Length: 70
Image (cartoon, rainbow, N blue to C red):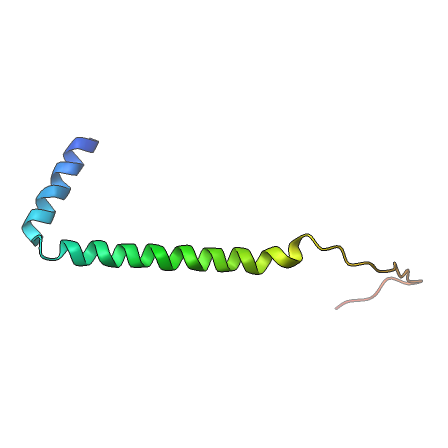
């Protein structure tokens, strides 16, 4: 079975074979994807946060018979 050092060596060989020309483009696109993911996660968190801690006052309505649902 492969260890961590062997896998790292294989990864370096693959990068060398495929060429270093694509490496900056790949890192740029990975960084762009990480920024998009981070901003979307922040937007979802902000969307959920305003109503998360609100308590809405109301009254309890009791029924004589339980509602029948199909």
